[in-house]
Length: 539
Ligand code: UD2
Ligand code: MN
Image (tube, rainbow, N blue to C red; front, side, top):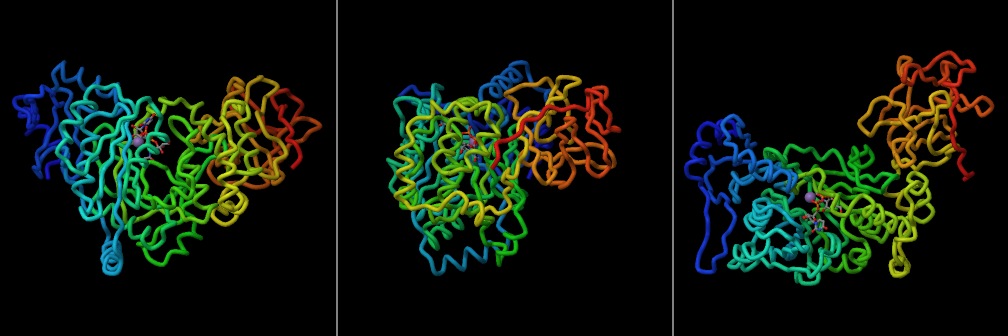
C-alpha cells in the first residue's frame, strides 16, 4: 500500500492530467459530482492511509477548491474526493472477536437490519462512501435496506444526482422530508418507512469496518433489550486517515452542566465483570450517532422524544431510559465504525437548542437529580420554552421504569453527584473583582477572569469534604502550586465565613491573587484574599 506521502509524488500529477474519476452524464442531463471509483489497492487513502496533499504543487484553483470544501463541510472534502468511494480498510478483529462471532453464528440466526442514515447538506463523497462501506461489509442476508433520510438539504448534489446515483441499488432508499426536522425527527421518519426487526442508526460520514454488524446483531439476538454501539474510530477530517487502534478503554459519561455525552475511562468494576475480551461493556451512556437496537424495544421505550428539536440530548435520553426501563446499553469491542468528527457543525441547532433538549431529559427522567443540573447551569435556565412534558412523563409512568437514583447506584456508581455542597456558584475575588475560572476542561491551573455570569467555567462547588471543584475538575495543591486535575483531593480547602478566606487546610495558607495569578500566601487581611461565594440551599 502506498502511503499518502508516496502517492503525492507518484499520483498527483496523474490526478492533474487525468483523474481516475467518473463523470456520468447521459440523456437525463443530470451530472454527478466528481469522485473516484477505483478498486486499486495502491490508490490514495487505501487501507485507511492518510492523504496529504503538498500545497507546494497545488494550483491556485485547487487551493480555492480545498478551502471552499472545508468551509462548507468542516472537513477536507478536497482530500476525500481523491479517495475511492470503495476504499478498503484494515481488518481489525482480534482472534477473540473472530472466535466469539464464529461460535455464536453456529447457533444463532442473525436478525435482518434496516440501516437509517439521516443527512443535511453533507458532502458527496463521505455520504456515498458511507453507503458503500455498508453495502460491501454487511452480510447481504442480513442487510434488508439502507434508508437515507434527507433532512431538507439545500445542496443540489443531494437531490437529482443522489437519486440518480442510487437508482439501481435495490437496497438503497431515499426519503425526503418536507421541512427541516432536525436529526431526531428525521430519524423517526426513517424508522417509519423501515421494515427490518433491527434498526441501525449511522451518521452520514462514516465507514464500516469488516465485521462491524455481526457482533452487534449477535448481542441483540442474545438479548433483545440490548442497545449496542460500536467502537468509534476517528476518521481524520483533514487526511481521512482511519485505522482501528482506538482502544476500548473508555465508555459513556455525561456532564452535569449540559447533560452532554463524554468519554470516561472504564472502571475496574466493569473490567472485572467481563469474562472475555469479546464481552461487551455495560456503558452508562452512548454517543448516539451509531448504534443498533431492536425495533420492538425502541418502540417499547417510546422511540425518540419528537419534541426534541435539531441536535443533541436524544442520545442521553435513550441511554437513561434504556437502563431505567429494563434494558442494557453496551459498547461492543468487536464492532468498529469510522466517523469523521467535525467541529463547528453542531451550530445548526445552536447550543441553546441542544440545551433545551437536555432540559426535557432532566424533567422527564432525572427526578430530583435534575436540580444538580439546574444548579450547575442555572444562568441558562429558561424552562418556559421546553414544550409539553405530559406525554413523555406518562410514557415513563406506564413503562414502570426505575428511578434515576437506581440508575446512579446500580449502573453508574462512580458518577460523582455534586452532593454535600455548602457553596455553589461563582467565586469572586474582592481585591481584583474578577472571578475564579477553570479556563476549560483541558486546563491545568485556574485563572482569574472577568466575572461572566454565563460562563460554565466559573461555577464551582465547595463541599463538606473540603473539595473545591467543577464537574470532573478538582482544584488541588501540588508542591505549593495550585493545579486543576481530574481526580479529587479531599480535605484540601476550608472556607472561613468570618473573613471570607479560602484556606488550604494542610499548610494553613490562604488563596490569594498576585500579579493576576492564583497562588497561596500567608493569611492576612488584604482584599485579594477575600472571596465572595454563594451558600447553597441546605440539602
Ligand atoms: C453526535 C452523534 C450524532 C448525534 C449527536 C447528538 C456520533 C458519532 N454522532 O454528534 O449522531 O447523536 O451527537 O444529537 O455519536 N443532521 C440532520 N439534521 C440536522 C442536524 C444533523 O440530518 O438538523 C444529520 C447530520 O447530517 C449527520 C447526523 O445528523 O448525518 C449527525 O449530526 P453530526 O454529525 O453533526 O453530529 P455529531 O457527529 O457531531
Ligand atoms: Mn457525525
